[in-house]
Image (cartoon, rainbow over all chains, first blue to last red; front, side, top):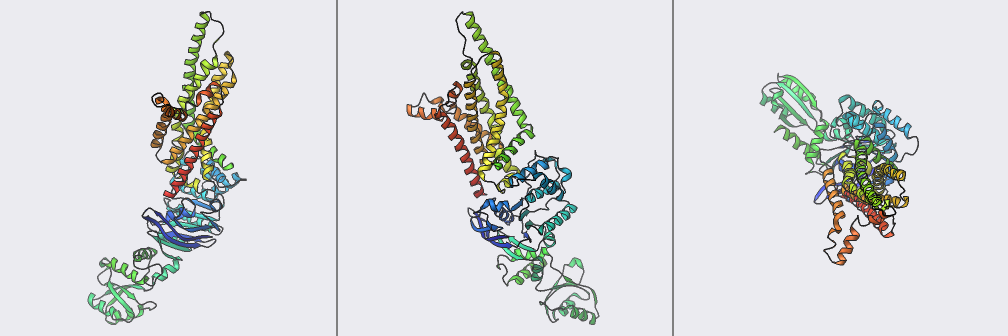
Length: 332
Length: 255
């Protein structure tokens, strides 16, 4: 439904987006993840036809956004980072105007009512846009994006500035829309991606550093599993005992704040060392106070992916090494 | 066409949803009314003197009153138009609504023409109020309607020229004050550009006279529709809109 092919955009010597490629299948939600200034907004602006790319192609529903901009735009709904509202218009006037310029010709009134109901702004229909709260502005922006029932929705940080309840409602709405629309959304809130998206594109400094589903990303990055252990015994002895277990690659003392003899034990991929750890500690007469696997959160993955980026190209087998670098950096 | 009208309607509603439209129309009417009053008073005294002097015939009201009145009306345009056009693009860029327009299935031309027609509509509303003054002349005098009609045509054409130029300047910046000041300065320069014509050579004089926006208005105020002047104003408008289009387009590439 959306195909982005070797897209680059340069402003003089500065490369904002560098050879970005990805595709989104019909009905999918793609999450666009990256730190501020990574090129998320720029890429979205290219897809929506707001700015042209220096090189590369982008197609929406089969229409090239540069060659057939009107056809592509007719099928795209776009919520920019700042909802594009006219302060002097009421919500109803605004949505009616947007419906007209998006090419709707008949039943505009009904469609506006329907969309206002769908985005929970019907109670503010006759309020001026300038007087809306941040949450309502964001939702009117969302209403504006879906008014012409586009195939593709491009949402730039749709939940920014909403309160927790509104965030949940908005995510719910986005998931509902996903069946009939193909959605690209950007965010820097990581749980949002795992909760709403089927695919994730991680972008940093204009380059795509990872494309995968959130689950795959988590398991891939978790190549070597880490176990947190707290034992009641002499620190040095416990450490050497753990070190000598089969399948253990590395033992490092965990954050001293969590207790005296606390360790993070890295094991080889696919080897479960928990039984050995437990029995070796107990057989020496020490107490095993705590043992739990450390899951890599999306935050860790995100950090490791963007940290490894200079050394390893996306998807290259150097991923685990990059992860170690991050681990060491956190312990230092 | 529908898209153009949608944009034009949005622009017009924008003017009248805020105090802008009412203030502009209202104070335009005030200034025009003042000019009207002074000219009528002057005309009255002149006629009186002629009657006292015992000379026959009467003064030509079109020549003595309407033409200078319309000339004065163009001065208001000079001062008021920067206020109308300075926000057209600057405001859209600042509030981010430019992103909405440029990602909608409408062409740059439709946006520009829509904005132009919207601004022209506001100007037409300002002129519409002055029809009342002309009505007063018809009630108490016998002016000819044709020179008045050409005068209004001239006002619209001259207004259109200024609006298209103002639109272009507005498209260059996201700062309204900057847009307003540059627009006013360029208008004023075009206004007085032929003041130096008597000091420069005959060729330069002809060029400067051709460039001057006021020079081309005189004939309209006298009731003459000369194709030379029509072409001048129409090509002025076309150039302004064309430059706006190029400016909007280049803005995209610069990001």
